[in-house]
Length: 391
Image (cartoon, rainbow, N blue to C red; front, side, top):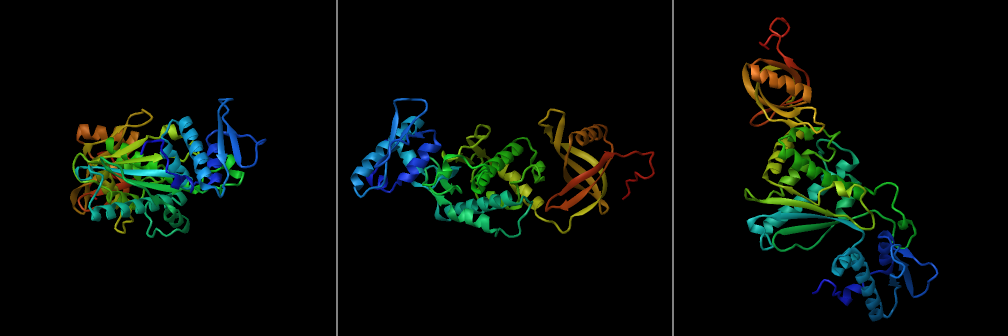
């Protein structure tokens, strides 16, 4: 089917109220002097162009013809295929999130059944975790059962896949007034809950991708700065991990045209999560879960490796550092994320081979340790009797 060929059987399903809503929200202005069997709209940038929207009628053939002309007119102004505009109109006003698996097994646009079920499960859990974070950000949700979040996920719809990759398109309906009311002529003063969820999802996957690129994934554990990150989010994302070293998961968004996104230009059109991002999620998940064995104490040790990068504000390097700290009579490897000032001290200690001391919350991971909430980070003063290393 050509991009502007529209099936009559779909056009008759298109509600006139949805066409009018779409026209108003995409810049068309209604000519209130014209009433009756059609609604007439004019675009502010052109005095000659008019959009004619039919009202529902028992003559379905005539309605399909007029509705098709209206859809093609809207598509021409947006420079999009008419079929794409029709698809948007047939859905309730929605943001569409696409999860594109690029891997050797997905090149034909299909996947094994078990893998497809795993992807659907992962996407559902991912949406649910972000929906909960949009209500109350926290590092781990023991149960994903908030009514608002579950209702949001339950209303999402799955679209078709695309060739060359396996793409799962999920339409997330917006919480807007019903078509036919006059409330939709102006954007709501506060973004609907569903829009907050989709925006948070896109910001969070971008934060994870950027942190993985700069080896600063540990900074994402601060939910005050990264509210969408949780253990549930990371664990759900791992279900979407494609196989193969060069494979990746592309996550993109198509924002509903009836509700513009204020900072859409600051968001990437598609975020590619490569294997490094999934490795970062794998490391983050256990660190975000509650650890009953975690203990806050004072530790001493050596700086083994500096893995940080330049801070966004350009004031100096900060981020991930690997230490060898004294614990239970032995030295163990521990990862820590340091501020710019703390990182400078770690660098000096590393260059001089000197002992450091710090206070923090030590979490025991399967193959290493993680120290969080670091305070009192500094060099050991050999002349201070309180700075003893035999702790």
